[in-house]
Amino acid sequence: MAGLCAGLFLKQRGWSVEIYERSPDELTSRGAGIVSHPELLALLAETGADTDTEFGVPIGDRRVVNRDGEIVARFHYPQIATSWTRLLHMLGDIFPPEHYHLGKNVTAVSADVQHVRIEFDDGTSASGDILVGADGIRSTIRGFVLTDAEPLYAGYVGWRGLVRERDIPRDLRSDVFSTMMFCLPPGEQIICYPVAGPGDDLRPGHRSLNLIWYVPAGDRRELGALLTDVHGTTHSGSIPPPLIRPDVVTAMRAHAEDVLAPQFRALLPLAPQPFLQPIYDFESGRMVRDRIALIGDAAFVARPHVGAGVYKAAGDAHALAMALGEGRDIDAGLRRFEAERLPIGRRIVDFGRYLGHCLRDDFGTERERQAAAHHRSPFGIIEETARLAFLYRTGE
Figure (cartoon, rainbow, N blue to C red):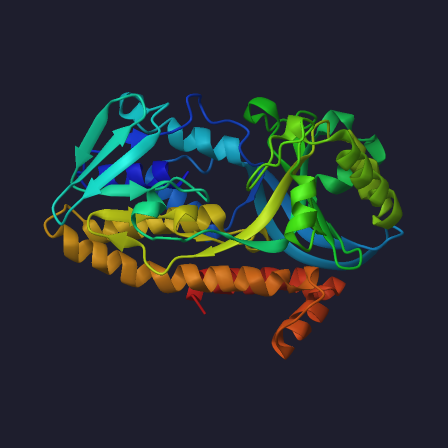
């Protein structure tokens, strides 16, 4: 997503752009739901994407339900929810396909003050005036800008799933497809909201519901057990959904019966393949080295509570293109880009940590303890919606 935004913004300013994707296949179903904001829609429209036609599913408010399923808090906040795949296709459709290369895994980078050369594991290479590292949380390019910089585990995981609209009981369907719904078990948080269905389908009856349930997994040993697959192999960072052990899924579903509202207890079993997302933070000390720039999750990883992943990526890409302009002074442009985006990235990551305090039981400061208490309350969690909008608009 960050790479496509950067490619589109740079091309608009006269740059020749090649995008190299390490996956050998077209990216689909990587992630699930994205909730839009006016600032994100404005940036996407500037890439040339049509954000006015079938962008996503409108939702009218945010609601919190208690253990018995009763609505205990409600906040009017119209938004449009879409899917990662839908947005990827919107951007990919306007980027020239002949300049988008699959199966290009970078193995070496050499950079100086004037140009960059990259080598791939298939024996080919490429060079240019700048290299933009937009390769996500497990970035390869990051290692050529920063040394010994790895995402930090936040102490909890997110169980994610997609449920087809047609599989949801009729009496529940109308409620969950008009809102973003929360439930707050002690020390946990679960959310659902509608997104496009398979094939980016937005027709009523053909959409999907995105679920994410944050559950503490406090230490590396507990996380390691969750990431150990059916063959006994412990994965680093994440685990392919089909390899999650059946006993882990069974324990998750049993816990749901004990703590979740009836709406969520009805929805979770309908997700055919839940997947597990350990939650991480990452904060860069720098975004530029020589002619290499980092953007998106390669530079800063904010927790999903902030809902800012795509917005941050698009903002980085736009700022980079604006700072570089037509490339008359590349080095000065890269310095301007870094000076603008470093404090923004840090602020967004810090806000994600602040929102995540409600999923912890150990606090280093009184501010953390107060934040946890606030976000464990029904009105506390949904009123942060307004703060998110304020954060985006002012940077405060």
